[in-house]
Length: 178
Image (cartoon, rainbow, N blue to C red; front, side):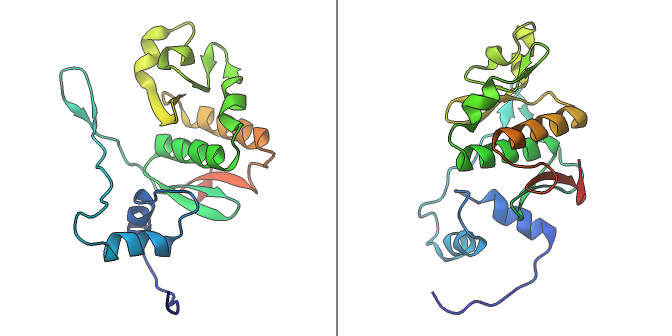
């Protein structure tokens, strides 16, 4: 590798870089090198298929606000609240191997926070399993959440990893902590 230059990028470009991240430890330079210097179609990551709703129509994820997740001073872009929650859970799972198993023991009323099967998230309301979203390695998370519920669960997740929400871990909407 040669010498480094500092460049300015806007938030949309940063989000595009983050969407191409393949591993938590991958630097922005490594992402750009892979994307920009790779031969056409060589090692291209498979494109994600949109989720298909009943009736065969694709569901499109809504983007509202400027969402991001901060972990130990590193900011990760997110498209919306649900994506920010997913980014947080994936990052904590990557850094703390037993996190998902511990987080699976947590629940609020009759809803588990994460589970190995969609129906296990909603013990009293199995019809809500359609809101389960894949997380990683066979885990699912509840995506049918309000902002206050995500904020509460993010604090619990941070605590389980020995981190403090507000200083070590934060979910930000337009750079304001939720």
